[in-house]
Structures are given as C-alpha cells and as structure tokens.
Length: 186
Image 1 (spheres, rainbow, N blue to C red):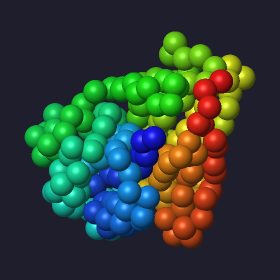
Image 2 (image 1 turned 90 degrees about the vertical axis):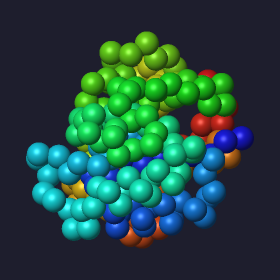
Image 3 (image 1 turned 180 degrees about the vertical axis):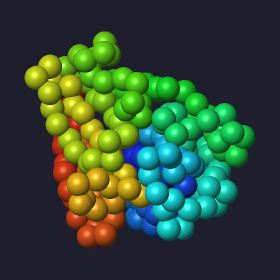
Image 4 (image 1 turned 45 degrees about the vertical axis):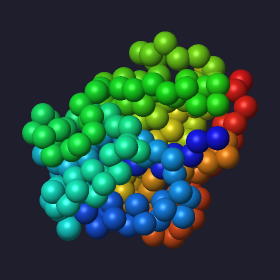
C-alpha cells in the first residue's frame, strides 16, 4: 500500500518546506503530492521569512522522482524552468485503494463542478485552511492547509496518507489535527 505526504501552499518559504520534509521522513512516504503555490509568495501574501524559491526548488528537485504536483494560482512558466518535475497541470487524478483521488490547487475546480461520486477524494489547498469533510454526495474533501501561511490562527500543516488513514498534522505541535479512514472504498 502506497503512502503519501500531501503538501500545499509552500509559497517559496524554505524553512517551512525543510521542516515539513524532515517531519514527513518519519513516515517514509512513497510519493509527495504537491497541491500548488510552490515558489511564489503571491501578490496577496507578504514575503515570508526564509523566502528562498531557489532553495525550495533545489529541495523538491532532489525528490523529483517522488513528486506529483499540480499548478496553483501563483505558478507560472518561469517556475517550471526551476523545477525538474511537472508543475503546470491544473489537476491530476490518481487511483488509490480503489478510490479516485482528484488533485487540484482549489482555485479552478470544486466538488460541484467535477464528475466525482461517493467515495472519491478531492485534494485541494488554496484556502490555507486545513480540514477534512464528507459532503452530502459522499465525496471526501481534504485540504492539508498551508505550511507557510495558515489562515484563521491555525498552525502550519500538511497531511500523511498511510495504511489507509489520512491524517492532517500540525507542524508546531506534532498533533493530528484531523483524520479519516479511507482504506475501504464506499
């Protein structure tokens, strides 16, 4: 069974990425699912402390064989010139344990506009708000939060999928902030 580290909204902050990658190593993820806004801080965000897009690119390029990424609203073709893995697709789909996982940043697609069915998983970032919810149609919506700019006073977070369970983990407290069992398709 594959395991994933799910990271979103890095926004060029090398210390946040470094801490996340070090933390995720304990889970030995097979792949890193990166949900966009990788290098650029974005026009609505301040420049984060530790802003170093070239170092972020270098750290992620070292894992390029293990990265599946989608484009965020802050990505551009210039970013792709630094990254050695595709990062400009607006979405990606995976088949994980007999479930369709739809990966997107969150600014272009939502569950209502997609052909998702009960049991499918929608992974998105963009809002910088971590959470897991099952909607009325039975679609599991997962947002790992942001490792750089969490909103609403939350702590920086990312997610780990391992042994059929998805946990959103706070980087400051090392606590599971939200969890869902996904091992058996509906």
